[in-house]
Length: 200
Image (cartoon, rainbow, N blue to C red):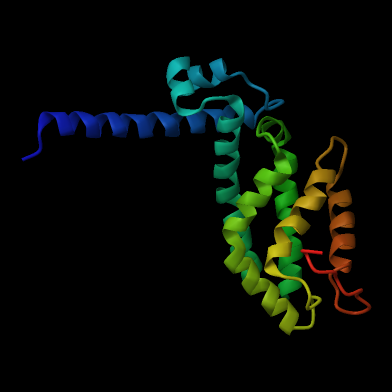
């Protein structure tokens, strides 16, 4: 028999999860409109909770922005990765994936500014997809499209590098494609300079 106390605990946990989800949803709306610099008070009002409730779940702005960035990343990067896996040209799939990531990050610059260390956060998120990225890397190498000394572990950093430099104001989608093309030219197997080991 379930006691009243246990029911109360379960309800509090359920309410806490619901509040956290509402806060993240509200923050996503606030962070991704205008300049992306809405206040935590504005987010709490939009979520229908008090500011103290917001702080119980997210101790500071960076933690909340990071939770929103993670949600957007999962919503947009995972489908783009699946599309890349199905591309007849594995290296073209990787290039399109890099362009999709860059376009996403450019669209949410205000949020990124609030999320703290953008390269480190993005690198951590990308490493959750190491296995499917490894699959594409191996296919591209077997097809002769990618230099053989590239490892799946290199891909997150290769994706983060242009993101760190190409999300400044005034950079156009054409510029994105230009510099992504330069990066991927360095990944071609022909005339590639052997890479030093990562630990060197």
